[in-house]
Amino acid sequence: MFGATGCVGRAVTAAFTAAGSAVLEAARHRPPYADDHRFLALDAAAADPGELAGLLAAARVDTVVNATGGWVTGETENERVHVRLVENLLAALARLPGRIRLVQIGSVHEYGPLPAGTAAEETRPPHPASVYGRSKLAGAEAVLRATRAGLVDGVVLRVVNLCGPGAEVGFLGAAVRRLHAATPERPAELIVADARRDFLDVRDLAAAVLAAVTAPVAGQVINVGRGEAVPVAHVLDLLVAAAGRPPGTVRLRTAPVDSRGGDWTRVDIGRAARSLGWRPAVDLPESIKDMWDASRADPPVEQP
Image (cartoon, rainbow, N blue to C red; front, top):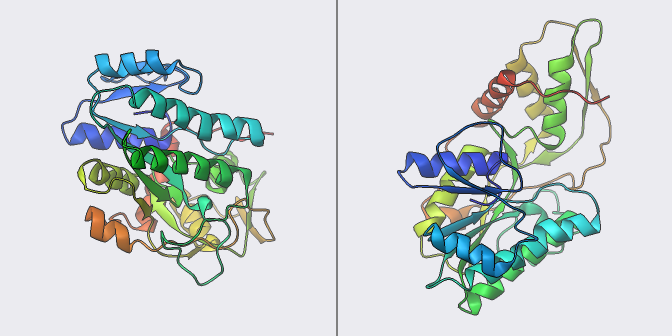
C-alpha cells in the first residue's frame, strides 16, 4: 500500500484488513499512530527500482495499490510524485515474477474541465487543464502502457472529490479547520462557490479498490464516484449541521472561488457497476457527519 498514511491509504488498508488480507504499508515517513502492519519508510520516487523490487519480493507482495500524491505545488513536485514515482514503481514491479496487479488511484481532474450537465464517461478524451491533472494523467497512461506491454496487471480508478473520515482536504479541510476554531467572538466565515461537484466517501473508494484487485479489469480506466453533481453550498450546510456550532459562530458568504477543478464535476459510474459489481453505499449526510466526528478526535489547526 503506497501512500499508506494518507486518507485513501488508511481507508484501503482498513478494507484489506477487514477482508483478512495482510498489508505492507509504504510511505515517506512512518506515521505517529501505531498499528499491526509492516511498514516501509521510503521515498518511492527516489528508490532504486532493483532495491524496491527486492523489498516487495521479500514481503511476497502480489498486489500493489498506489495512493500516493495529492494537491502539491509546482510542475517539479507534481512530476515527481505523480509521474516519476509511478514510473519507478512500474520499473520495480516489472522485475518481479508474474504480473502484479497494480491499482492506480487516478483523478477526475485527468478529464479536464467538464461542461455543466454532463457526466464524464471513461471513453471521454482527457484534456486536463491543471498541472495536477496533467501529471496524474501522465502517471495513469504509464500504468496503461506497462499493462499493454505485459509488465504489470494494471487498472486505473478515476476518483472524484473525497469526503468521509480523515478526508479533510481541499476546501472541505479548510472549512473543518475554521469550524473547529470558530467562536461567537471570532465566527468562521465560509465562502460558498456556485459550483456542483461529485463527492464520494473514502470508504466507498476503498471498497472499489478491493473489488478492483480481483476483477478482470486489466488495462481499464474505471470511474469511481457517486455519479451526482451536488451543490457545494449543500455540502457546507451538511458540515455546519454536523458541527452543531452555536448561533453566530458561522457565516456563509456566496462568492466566486478560484477552483483547480472547475465548477462542475460528475462521472458516469456504469462501468464500475458492470465491471466491479460496485456502487457507492455511504450517503452524503452520513459521510460528512462521520468526517466531522473523526476530526474531533484530533482537531486540525487553522493556519493564520
